[in-house]
Image 1 (cartoon, rainbow, N blue to C red):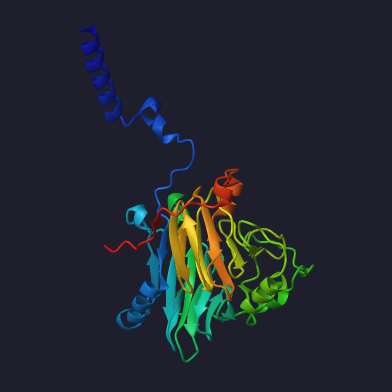
Image 2 (image 1 turned 30 degrees about the vertical axis):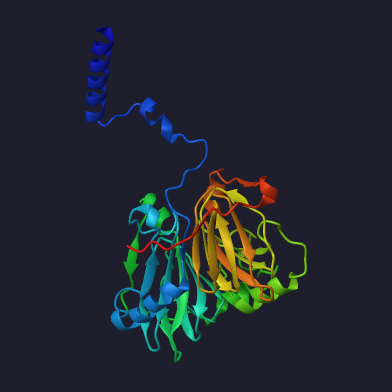
Length: 363
Protein backbone atom coordinates (compact mmCIF):
# COMPACT_ATOMS: atom_id res chain seq x y z
CA UNK A 1 0.00 0.00 0.00
CA UNK A 2 2.83 2.41 0.89
CA UNK A 3 4.58 1.76 -2.45
CA UNK A 4 1.34 2.41 -4.38
CA UNK A 5 0.77 5.66 -2.48
CA UNK A 6 4.37 6.74 -3.06
CA UNK A 7 4.07 5.96 -6.79
CA UNK A 8 0.82 7.91 -7.09
CA UNK A 9 2.29 10.79 -5.12
CA UNK A 10 5.41 10.79 -7.30
CA UNK A 11 3.39 10.81 -10.56
CA UNK A 12 1.17 13.61 -9.30
CA UNK A 13 4.20 15.60 -8.17
CA UNK A 14 5.91 15.25 -11.58
CA UNK A 15 2.73 16.27 -13.41
CA UNK A 16 2.41 19.43 -11.31
CA UNK A 17 6.11 20.19 -11.80
CA UNK A 18 5.94 19.75 -15.59
CA UNK A 19 2.76 21.85 -15.78
CA UNK A 20 4.80 24.71 -14.30
CA UNK A 21 7.55 24.24 -16.93
CA UNK A 22 10.01 22.68 -14.54
CA UNK A 23 11.94 19.41 -14.85
CA UNK A 24 14.04 17.60 -12.30
CA UNK A 25 17.75 17.05 -12.94
CA UNK A 26 17.07 13.37 -12.14
CA UNK A 27 14.95 13.27 -15.32
CA UNK A 28 17.68 14.82 -17.46
CA UNK A 29 20.74 12.99 -16.18
CA UNK A 30 20.84 10.77 -19.30
CA UNK A 31 21.66 13.84 -21.40
CA UNK A 32 24.95 14.27 -19.52
CA UNK A 33 26.69 11.78 -21.81
CA UNK A 34 30.23 10.47 -21.35
CA UNK A 35 31.17 11.83 -24.79
CA UNK A 36 29.42 13.81 -27.57
CA UNK A 37 26.53 12.01 -29.30
CA UNK A 38 25.86 14.23 -32.36
CA UNK A 39 22.43 14.14 -33.97
CA UNK A 40 23.86 15.15 -37.36
CA UNK A 41 24.90 12.32 -39.63
CA UNK A 42 28.23 11.88 -41.33
CA UNK A 43 27.04 12.57 -44.85
CA UNK A 44 28.23 13.14 -48.42
CA UNK A 45 26.71 15.14 -51.27
CA UNK A 46 28.27 13.56 -54.40
CA UNK A 47 28.97 15.95 -57.27
CA UNK A 48 27.34 13.40 -59.59
CA UNK A 49 24.03 14.14 -57.80
CA UNK A 50 24.60 17.85 -57.13
CA UNK A 51 25.77 18.94 -60.60
CA UNK A 52 22.58 18.01 -62.54
CA UNK A 53 20.50 19.95 -59.98
CA UNK A 54 22.87 22.91 -60.22
CA UNK A 55 22.56 22.81 -64.03
CA UNK A 56 18.76 22.60 -63.92
CA UNK A 57 18.54 25.43 -61.38
CA UNK A 58 20.11 27.73 -63.98
CA UNK A 59 16.99 27.27 -66.14
CA UNK A 60 14.38 27.13 -63.38
CA UNK A 61 15.54 29.66 -60.78
CA UNK A 62 16.32 33.27 -61.75
CA UNK A 63 18.69 35.40 -59.68
CA UNK A 64 16.19 37.82 -58.16
CA UNK A 65 16.38 39.17 -54.64
CA UNK A 66 18.22 36.07 -53.48
CA UNK A 67 21.11 33.96 -54.69
CA UNK A 68 20.88 30.76 -56.71
CA UNK A 69 22.48 28.74 -53.93
CA UNK A 70 21.59 25.12 -53.16
CA UNK A 71 21.74 24.59 -49.39
CA UNK A 72 23.09 21.21 -48.24
CA UNK A 73 20.79 20.03 -45.42
CA UNK A 74 22.04 17.25 -43.17
CA UNK A 75 19.34 14.53 -43.00
CA UNK A 76 20.09 13.89 -39.33
CA UNK A 77 19.06 17.40 -38.26
CA UNK A 78 15.33 17.20 -38.91
CA UNK A 79 15.06 19.75 -41.72
CA UNK A 80 17.15 22.43 -40.00
CA UNK A 81 19.01 24.91 -42.20
CA UNK A 82 22.30 23.19 -41.40
CA UNK A 83 24.95 20.88 -42.83
CA UNK A 84 26.41 20.45 -39.34
CA UNK A 85 25.17 21.76 -35.97
CA UNK A 86 26.99 25.06 -36.55
CA UNK A 87 27.73 25.29 -40.29
CA UNK A 88 25.81 25.37 -43.55
CA UNK A 89 27.44 24.56 -46.86
CA UNK A 90 25.86 25.47 -50.19
CA UNK A 91 26.68 25.31 -53.88
CA UNK A 92 26.07 28.62 -55.65
CA UNK A 93 26.04 29.26 -59.40
CA UNK A 94 25.95 32.55 -61.31
CA UNK A 95 25.51 32.86 -65.08
CA UNK A 96 27.06 35.36 -67.50
CA UNK A 97 25.64 38.85 -67.11
CA UNK A 98 23.89 38.13 -63.82
CA UNK A 99 24.20 40.23 -60.67
CA UNK A 100 23.18 38.92 -57.26
CA UNK A 101 21.93 41.98 -55.36
CA UNK A 102 23.83 43.49 -52.45
CA UNK A 103 22.99 42.74 -48.86
CA UNK A 104 24.66 42.12 -45.52
CA UNK A 105 24.06 39.77 -42.61
CA UNK A 106 25.57 38.83 -39.29
CA UNK A 107 26.50 35.28 -40.37
CA UNK A 108 30.05 35.06 -41.69
CA UNK A 109 30.55 33.58 -45.17
CA UNK A 110 33.39 32.02 -47.12
CA UNK A 111 33.58 31.00 -50.78
CA UNK A 112 35.74 28.29 -52.37
CA UNK A 113 35.63 28.54 -56.16
CA UNK A 114 34.76 25.19 -57.72
CA UNK A 115 34.43 25.95 -61.43
CA UNK A 116 34.77 28.86 -63.84
CA UNK A 117 36.50 32.24 -63.75
CA UNK A 118 35.67 35.88 -64.40
CA UNK A 119 32.91 36.28 -61.84
CA UNK A 120 33.44 38.52 -58.85
CA UNK A 121 32.28 39.26 -55.36
CA UNK A 122 32.35 42.83 -54.07
CA UNK A 123 32.89 43.21 -50.32
CA UNK A 124 32.40 46.65 -48.74
CA UNK A 125 33.19 48.39 -52.01
CA UNK A 126 36.14 46.19 -53.06
CA UNK A 127 35.73 43.92 -56.09
CA UNK A 128 37.47 40.53 -56.03
CA UNK A 129 37.58 38.38 -59.15
CA UNK A 130 37.33 34.60 -58.86
CA UNK A 131 39.47 31.79 -60.23
CA UNK A 132 39.09 28.05 -59.50
CA UNK A 133 40.54 27.13 -56.12
CA UNK A 134 40.48 30.68 -54.76
CA UNK A 135 39.31 31.09 -51.17
CA UNK A 136 37.33 34.31 -50.53
CA UNK A 137 36.01 35.82 -47.29
CA UNK A 138 32.85 37.78 -46.52
CA UNK A 139 33.12 38.96 -42.89
CA UNK A 140 30.07 39.43 -40.71
CA UNK A 141 27.95 42.48 -41.54
CA UNK A 142 29.97 43.37 -44.66
CA UNK A 143 28.02 44.62 -47.68
CA UNK A 144 28.51 42.22 -50.58
CA UNK A 145 27.18 41.41 -54.03
CA UNK A 146 28.18 39.00 -56.79
CA UNK A 147 28.35 39.37 -60.56
CA UNK A 148 29.57 37.49 -63.62
CA UNK A 149 31.39 39.38 -66.37
CA UNK A 150 32.57 36.16 -68.03
CA UNK A 151 31.09 34.00 -70.80
CA UNK A 152 30.47 30.84 -68.76
CA UNK A 153 28.88 29.80 -65.51
CA UNK A 154 30.85 30.12 -62.27
CA UNK A 155 30.20 27.80 -59.32
CA UNK A 156 31.47 28.02 -55.79
CA UNK A 157 31.03 26.39 -52.39
CA UNK A 158 29.55 28.69 -49.76
CA UNK A 159 30.22 28.11 -46.07
CA UNK A 160 28.37 30.09 -43.39
CA UNK A 161 27.88 29.91 -39.62
CA UNK A 162 24.11 30.39 -39.95
CA UNK A 163 23.10 27.53 -37.58
CA UNK A 164 25.34 28.97 -34.86
CA UNK A 165 24.02 32.50 -35.33
CA UNK A 166 20.45 31.20 -35.26
CA UNK A 167 21.11 29.25 -32.05
CA UNK A 168 22.47 32.43 -30.46
CA UNK A 169 19.46 34.39 -31.79
CA UNK A 170 21.81 36.97 -33.29
CA UNK A 171 20.51 36.92 -36.89
CA UNK A 172 20.38 40.30 -38.65
CA UNK A 173 19.88 40.76 -42.40
CA UNK A 174 19.67 43.94 -44.46
CA UNK A 175 19.29 44.43 -48.22
CA UNK A 176 21.19 47.33 -49.76
CA UNK A 177 19.19 50.25 -51.17
CA UNK A 178 20.61 49.68 -54.67
CA UNK A 179 21.37 46.49 -56.59
CA UNK A 180 25.12 46.91 -56.06
CA UNK A 181 27.28 48.73 -53.53
CA UNK A 182 29.36 51.51 -55.16
CA UNK A 183 33.01 50.58 -55.60
CA UNK A 184 35.03 52.75 -53.20
CA UNK A 185 38.31 50.81 -53.14
CA UNK A 186 40.68 49.61 -55.87
CA UNK A 187 40.05 46.05 -57.03
CA UNK A 188 41.93 43.47 -54.93
CA UNK A 189 43.21 46.13 -52.54
CA UNK A 190 43.18 43.72 -49.59
CA UNK A 191 45.52 41.37 -51.48
CA UNK A 192 47.97 44.21 -52.17
CA UNK A 193 47.97 45.20 -48.51
CA UNK A 194 47.82 41.87 -46.73
CA UNK A 195 48.60 39.17 -49.29
CA UNK A 196 52.33 38.94 -48.59
CA UNK A 197 53.43 35.95 -46.53
CA UNK A 198 54.57 36.98 -43.03
CA UNK A 199 54.52 40.65 -44.03
CA UNK A 200 51.75 43.11 -43.11
CA UNK A 201 51.55 46.91 -43.41
CA UNK A 202 52.78 48.40 -40.13
CA UNK A 203 50.78 51.60 -40.60
CA UNK A 204 47.48 49.70 -40.47
CA UNK A 205 46.79 49.62 -36.73
CA UNK A 206 43.27 48.19 -36.79
CA UNK A 207 43.20 44.41 -36.39
CA UNK A 208 39.67 43.18 -37.12
CA UNK A 209 38.45 39.86 -35.74
CA UNK A 210 38.06 38.52 -39.29
CA UNK A 211 41.01 38.43 -41.66
CA UNK A 212 41.36 41.71 -43.61
CA UNK A 213 42.71 39.67 -46.53
CA UNK A 214 39.62 38.90 -48.60
CA UNK A 215 41.15 36.48 -51.14
CA UNK A 216 43.65 33.66 -50.78
CA UNK A 217 44.51 32.80 -54.42
CA UNK A 218 44.74 29.18 -55.48
CA UNK A 219 48.08 29.78 -57.19
CA UNK A 220 49.74 30.65 -53.87
CA UNK A 221 47.91 27.89 -52.00
CA UNK A 222 48.94 25.26 -54.54
CA UNK A 223 52.56 26.46 -54.58
CA UNK A 224 52.65 26.21 -50.78
CA UNK A 225 51.30 22.65 -50.86
CA UNK A 226 53.78 21.63 -53.58
CA UNK A 227 56.71 23.14 -51.68
CA UNK A 228 55.90 20.81 -48.78
CA UNK A 229 54.92 17.79 -50.85
CA UNK A 230 58.03 15.80 -49.97
CA UNK A 231 58.13 16.86 -46.33
CA UNK A 232 57.29 14.80 -43.28
CA UNK A 233 53.65 15.59 -42.50
CA UNK A 234 50.87 14.86 -40.03
CA UNK A 235 50.09 11.13 -39.87
CA UNK A 236 46.43 12.10 -39.33
CA UNK A 237 45.87 14.94 -41.83
CA UNK A 238 48.76 14.72 -44.29
CA UNK A 239 50.19 18.00 -45.54
CA UNK A 240 47.63 20.34 -43.97
CA UNK A 241 47.82 24.14 -44.08
CA UNK A 242 45.54 26.60 -42.35
CA UNK A 243 44.43 29.85 -43.98
CA UNK A 244 45.38 32.45 -41.37
CA UNK A 245 44.73 36.04 -40.37
CA UNK A 246 47.73 37.97 -41.80
CA UNK A 247 48.02 40.32 -38.82
CA UNK A 248 47.53 37.89 -35.93
CA UNK A 249 48.39 34.48 -37.38
CA UNK A 250 45.10 33.18 -35.95
CA UNK A 251 42.01 31.74 -37.61
CA UNK A 252 40.58 33.64 -40.59
CA UNK A 253 37.21 34.09 -38.85
CA UNK A 254 36.10 34.14 -35.19
CA UNK A 255 33.68 31.28 -35.85
CA UNK A 256 35.31 29.34 -38.70
CA UNK A 257 38.74 27.90 -39.39
CA UNK A 258 39.61 26.87 -42.95
CA UNK A 259 42.23 24.45 -44.17
CA UNK A 260 43.68 22.90 -47.30
CA UNK A 261 45.36 19.52 -47.20
CA UNK A 262 47.26 17.33 -49.62
CA UNK A 263 47.19 13.54 -49.41
CA UNK A 264 49.85 11.91 -51.57
CA UNK A 265 49.13 8.97 -53.93
CA UNK A 266 48.49 5.77 -52.03
CA UNK A 267 48.78 7.52 -48.66
CA UNK A 268 46.52 6.19 -45.91
CA UNK A 269 46.24 8.49 -42.89
CA UNK A 270 45.57 7.37 -39.32
CA UNK A 271 42.24 7.62 -37.51
CA UNK A 272 41.58 10.33 -34.95
CA UNK A 273 38.72 12.46 -33.67
CA UNK A 274 38.08 15.90 -32.25
CA UNK A 275 35.26 18.00 -30.89
CA UNK A 276 33.59 20.35 -33.36
CA UNK A 277 32.16 19.67 -36.80
CA UNK A 278 33.66 20.14 -40.27
CA UNK A 279 32.73 20.22 -43.94
CA UNK A 280 35.21 18.86 -46.50
CA UNK A 281 35.25 19.66 -50.22
CA UNK A 282 37.26 17.54 -52.65
CA UNK A 283 39.21 20.01 -54.77
CA UNK A 284 41.30 17.40 -56.58
CA UNK A 285 41.76 13.67 -56.83
CA UNK A 286 39.97 10.66 -55.45
CA UNK A 287 40.00 8.69 -52.25
CA UNK A 288 37.98 7.57 -49.30
CA UNK A 289 37.18 8.65 -45.75
CA UNK A 290 36.12 6.17 -43.08
CA UNK A 291 33.89 7.77 -40.43
CA UNK A 292 32.94 5.54 -37.48
CA UNK A 293 33.30 2.50 -39.73
CA UNK A 294 31.30 3.94 -42.67
CA UNK A 295 33.27 4.19 -45.92
CA UNK A 296 32.76 7.35 -48.01
CA UNK A 297 34.31 7.00 -51.47
CA UNK A 298 34.89 10.46 -52.93
CA UNK A 299 36.14 12.26 -55.99
CA UNK A 300 36.48 15.84 -57.19
CA UNK A 301 33.43 18.00 -56.38
CA UNK A 302 32.05 15.88 -53.54
CA UNK A 303 31.18 17.48 -50.17
CA UNK A 304 31.42 15.56 -46.87
CA UNK A 305 30.00 16.60 -43.47
CA UNK A 306 31.88 15.39 -40.39
CA UNK A 307 30.20 15.35 -36.94
CA UNK A 308 31.89 16.07 -33.64
CA UNK A 309 33.88 13.33 -31.89
CA UNK A 310 33.68 10.67 -34.59
CA UNK A 311 36.69 8.62 -35.59
CA UNK A 312 37.74 9.43 -39.15
CA UNK A 313 40.63 8.75 -41.48
CA UNK A 314 41.37 9.84 -45.05
CA UNK A 315 43.12 7.87 -47.78
CA UNK A 316 44.18 8.68 -51.34
CA UNK A 317 43.23 5.68 -53.47
CA UNK A 318 45.00 6.89 -56.61
CA UNK A 319 48.47 5.55 -57.41
CA UNK A 320 49.48 8.63 -59.39
CA UNK A 321 47.42 11.74 -58.50
CA UNK A 322 47.53 13.90 -55.39
CA UNK A 323 44.26 14.41 -53.51
CA UNK A 324 43.53 17.92 -52.19
CA UNK A 325 40.77 18.69 -49.70
CA UNK A 326 39.45 22.07 -48.58
CA UNK A 327 37.66 22.19 -45.23
CA UNK A 328 35.68 24.46 -42.92
CA UNK A 329 35.60 23.87 -39.18
CA UNK A 330 33.92 25.45 -36.16
CA UNK A 331 37.13 24.91 -34.17
CA UNK A 332 37.53 28.61 -33.14
CA UNK A 333 34.21 28.47 -31.27
CA UNK A 334 35.24 25.34 -29.38
CA UNK A 335 38.62 26.85 -28.54
CA UNK A 336 37.05 30.08 -27.28
CA UNK A 337 34.98 28.06 -24.81
CA UNK A 338 37.85 25.69 -23.86
CA UNK A 339 35.85 22.79 -25.34
CA UNK A 340 38.22 21.73 -28.12
CA UNK A 341 39.95 18.40 -27.65
CA UNK A 342 41.29 15.73 -29.96
CA UNK A 343 42.44 12.16 -29.60
CA UNK A 344 44.11 9.55 -31.77
CA UNK A 345 42.80 6.03 -32.26
CA UNK A 346 44.99 3.37 -30.68
CA UNK A 347 43.13 0.36 -32.08
CA UNK A 348 44.15 -1.86 -35.01
CA UNK A 349 47.27 0.12 -35.79
CA UNK A 350 45.34 3.37 -36.00
CA UNK A 351 42.90 2.22 -38.69
CA UNK A 352 39.20 1.41 -38.55
CA UNK A 353 37.35 -1.66 -39.71
CA UNK A 354 34.91 -0.79 -42.49
CA UNK A 355 31.45 -1.95 -41.44
CA UNK A 356 29.29 -0.32 -44.15
CA UNK A 357 29.41 1.91 -47.22
CA UNK A 358 27.76 5.30 -47.48
CA UNK A 359 24.55 5.56 -49.51
CA UNK A 360 22.81 8.91 -50.11
CA UNK A 361 19.43 9.33 -48.38
CA UNK A 362 16.86 9.98 -51.12
CA UNK A 363 13.48 11.14 -49.76
